[in-house]
Structure formats: structure tokens, C-alpha cells
Image 1 (tube, rainbow, N blue to C red):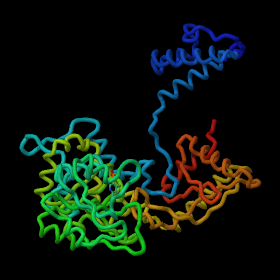
Image 2 (image 1 turned 120 degrees about the horizontal axis):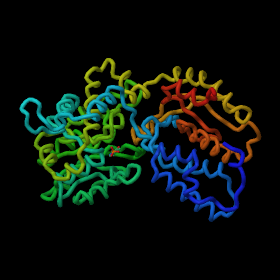
Image 3 (image 1 turned 180 degrees about the vertical axis):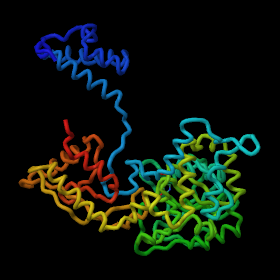
Image 4 (image 1 turned 30 degrees about the vertical axis):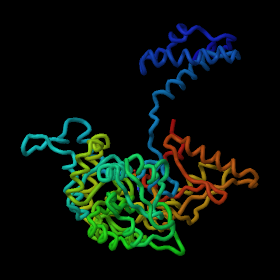
Length: 464
Ligand SMILES: *Cc1c(COP(=O)(O)O)cnc(C)c1O
């Protein structure tokens, strides 16, 4: 950088001149002319507007920044140290290496996605996961779509168009964002027939509601809330039997749909799709990227005749999974074949099962570097905290964990904005670190930190 580059001009130079500067030519070489030209024009227009003087060095720097802002990927890897294992905003389940390898294999070229290698004829993309899903759930048939919201929408639209769906008032759920059962029902073209009350619904409520207009009975799993006190719900087994007697399909939206018994992690028992089918559900829907630990997907399993109707719905075509999802889901489901090695191989299960003592030891290992990184500004220690599963899975059940707690070193005044600033600073790291603010501190729950070296490298000033 020559000295005159720092001379202050009152008016910005012409765009053609700027494009000829060596640093800008190098930028054109790297990113192409249209992008750099646009960035230069925008910057010069900004400077003319501001009319505040500028330097060649400053202009070069700003054009670089504008180009960087356009070419830098928006979707990036982050460290999820929020303490919420299945964080919807942070992408839910991390995938096992087997699933990533399976995606890479099909992503880079052609595959037999819808091609039967035996007959040389057209195949069905569901074929790559259907047998696995049937084996793991005891269902006769299965199909997959983009996510569980789509699975519910498609099921309702396929089986209950212009007819009635009976749902307990205690289960008219809203799940984060825009998934409200009554709205989904309306968009699916079904009539909602509510029965019972918010806290109590009995078998006879369903019995009385069933009639010629009834298309199906829907039971939605209370994923993200818990009704306590004077409550009652119809026993799912009895409800299933009643539906069977009346010839009405019984559909259960399980939400998370874990394929393993969570009691193994010291968590309360959650019904699995296999148990739900065994106890009388005709169809069960659940997510691929919640407790199952796979890619985003909506899985529908159950009675073959009903799955066949769902598969024939033209809306299925609009909700189908892409080859990457099918590849990843197949790989994750294959891991479930070996129950012995399951917990180590499926990251979500591994993170849920992680012993607090291991998390505590990790916290003590990263503490010195964090402390040095923050210097005199902050007071840093290790504290016990509670992680949650997230994505509406077992909302009231927490997992004992440990966090590094970061508090302002000086007087507590204005610590709210200090904490916001600290959280912002961690989000600006080359790999953003997302923690949470609670109890007057910025907390980094280390339950989900597996790349310890990568995290520590962020806190170590790079050489040179
Ligand atoms: C999470 C959830 C859904 C939505 O599933 P997505 O895979 O996020 O679309 C639907 N129903 C229940 C009960 C859920 O918990």
C-alpha cells in the first residue's frame, strides 16, 4: 500500500479508475467483474451521498468487504452450546458419518433412486427405506416425505378430504412456528370434529362423535407441553380397539417418534412407533430429524392399504424427499439394526446419553483457555446446569449437564447489555458459538461440544 493511498479526497474517484487499481483487479480475477463492479458502484454511491472524504485504501477495503458479504456462504456450521440438543433453529440432529458418506455417494453422480436394478425398470424411491422402516416398527408399509408436518398434512388429505377428523380438545396442538393442527386440518380439506375438553377426554366422547362423516380419528402426541392436575385421556389401546370395531382408521402423530426406549438414558418412557402400532394404531407419523437422529423427513408407517392410498395422492409428489435425504435416512436406519452400538453411532443418542461427569471434565479442560481469551473482562467458572432435548421432545424432562459460566468481572450494573454483547462476540467467531443467557450469566453448556480441538482453536490467537 503506497502512502498516497491514504490521502483523503473530498470526492470519490470514478468507477473506471477504481476498477484499475491492482487490489481491485485481483478481486475481479477472483470473483468476476459483475460482482466487483456492483460492489464498487455501491460503495462510490455511498461515499458520494455521505460527502465526507475518503481514501483509496478505505475504498479498497470497503469494496472487499462488500464482495465478501456477497460471496460468503450464509448457511454455516456453528457450535451449539445452548444446552438444547435438538435445536430446530440450529438444524436439529447432527448426522452420523455413515449418513454423510451415503449422501456424498449419491450426490456426486447418478444413482438407482427410482430404478430397479433387478428388472431394469422404474422403481420407487421409498423402496430404499421402506423395508428398514417396516422392520424397525413392525408396520406393513411405509412412505417418507419432507418433514412430519407434511406427513400429517398428506395423511389427512389422503384419507379425510371433505370428511371429519375426530381429535381430542387436549391435543389441538401448535408446534413452534406455523404448525397448528386446526390450520393443517383446514388446509388438508378436512373438517375438525373436536371432542372432550382441554384437560379431560374420555373414550365415550369419541364413541359419541363417530358417525357416517367420520374419516379417521387422530391422536397427536403432546410434544411440547404437559397437562397436569385433573386430567384424563382415552386409553390409546381402547381407542384403537373402538376405531377397529367401527372401521375408522386410527392415526397417531408421534412427533419425535424415538425408535429406542429412552429409559436407557434415564429419561421417561416415550411410546415408540413399534409400540404404537402394536397397541392398535393404523398409521403413525414421526420426524426423521428429532430423536431418530437422521435427516429432516416425515415418516408414515402402518397398514398397507392406507399407505397405498397416501402414496397415490398427487400431493405426495410435491412432498417427496430428495435423494440426499433418502440416502441419509437409509444409512441411519441401518445403524439401528445393531442395538449394541447404537448409542455410540447416532450422534443425537450419544449426546443425550453423555454422562455429566464427562461434560464436567470437558468444561474444566476448556476453562483455562476461555478464561485467558476473555482476560480481565470476565469471571469464568464451571457450573452444573440442565440441558433439554428440544424440538418438543419431552418438554419437562431435563438432563444434568455442565456449563462454563461467563459473568462480568466488574460491578453488575448494566450486566444485561454486557451479556448481550458477550453473546454477540461469540456469535462473531469464525465458527459462531451459540450459548444462552440465564441467571445473570452467559452460559456455554458443553453437552453438545464434541469437536473440542476445533472449539479451542477459536480461542487461540492464530500464529502469523
Ligand atoms: C415436531 C412435530 C411435528 C412437526 O414435525 P416436523 O418434522 O418438524 O415437520 C408434528 N407433530 C408433532 C407432535 C411434533 O412433535
